[in-house]
Image (cartoon, rainbow, N blue to C red; front, side, top):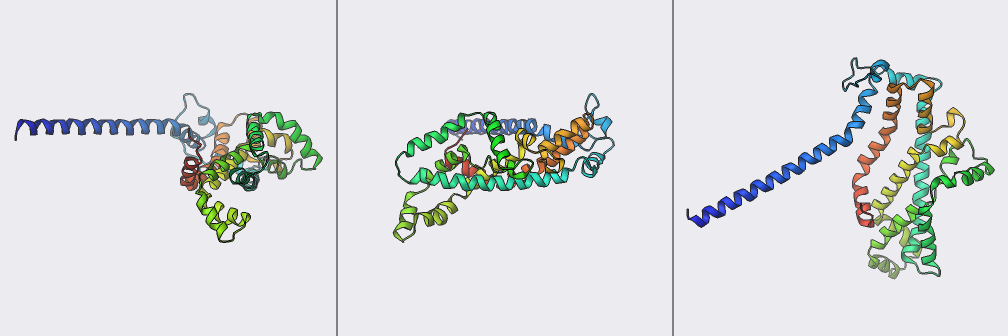
Length: 291
């Protein structure tokens, strides 16, 4: 083996070693970051299986001793805390609201992306400008409108008021702009109307963005606490976040009950994200909304 060959071999070995070290370092960093973000969820889960005394013990423990499902039995079987009813109410409200958000946003975003009409830029600018309005400002006007419509203390009050939003219109418009215009022109040459192009060409190609927007709308409605507290009064009409807040006052800060309720509230979110993860990644990347 010549000196030149030995030098090349040593250089290749050093390069491979550095590459392996960098890759290992990245994986270690990712694992540490993953543990950092997952640890609160794990602690919430293990605390829900502790006794009331152990859940409030200092310092806290990671392994329940003894392991018990008493917290779940208490909140699911109590007459004053109909958690299952709250869960169903939140599911109905979240699904209905996300469906309305997707429908209204898609119908508004497509004309702004593909059609030409007078005042188009002004309309789009006005819609985007509403993103800078704090939602809390709209509580009183929305409450007065909901009261006039006789929707107070009904699920309609937490479904309809947020059915049309600027973010959904902006998000879908950005995605529609990325679709090849040639597909729509080919469909138009085949005799398809604008509505047929929208329903049979654009919407099927926009499944990632539609799923992403539906999931975001569902999570926003599912996690909403302030608005349901204002418009829902009876225990049977409460949604899960508003209902779970009563556990703290009714049970003198029972951390085991609070964590059990939080686990129940987290299950749909985790499952939805696991199912729709690939649609979310594709929808965000193709819509131009990054970071």
